[in-house]
Image (tube, rainbow, N blue to C red; front, side, top):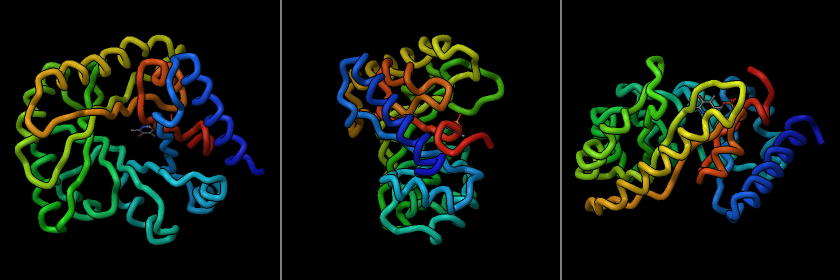
Length: 228
Ligand SMILES: *Cc1c(COP(=O)(O)O)cnc(C)c1O
């Protein structure tokens, strides 16, 4: 086994252990291997270890990598998306994690219609209210969900957050709890066509805490592929 494979297996073990602590089934947690800035050769090493789900944060890099790799992979767009780039990825990704405005959702809907697909999305929420981050404020999410729910060919399946960069992951537990609660609260409103079940939260520094708080998707880059 090479380093990528060792690290990938270590992350998998930690996911299982976090699930055990939380009384959850590991099959409820999808590991997204974040391969941004890393070469195709390293992605191939992860594939050889059974990894099929990858995350990228840039449209150009995603579009460059996809044709170089097997067609059976699942690609997730996790980074900020500009409206003029939606057309390049709408039929290539399994999930867009980073929908941060209603205008972007509308663009995705329009491009999805043209491409004849339905696109699954998450709404990015700036739970920690950091100036530097994209995403809806908590109090804006319900209204956004109501507006986006009316758009054709787009489906909101859950929420995503990027927690602050902290030394102690316990500091982020409160934000993961908040995202989980927001998801529960919005589901209770019984908005037409809306049943959110996915929580994309947790990165290399804090994915175990995120799993304890209900993450269904963790986005791990450095922990698998090394520093960027
Ligand atoms: C880069 C990135 C990650 C992975 O970060 P690591 O700390 O390397 O695990 C997760 N989510 C998003 C949105 C990212 O841009």
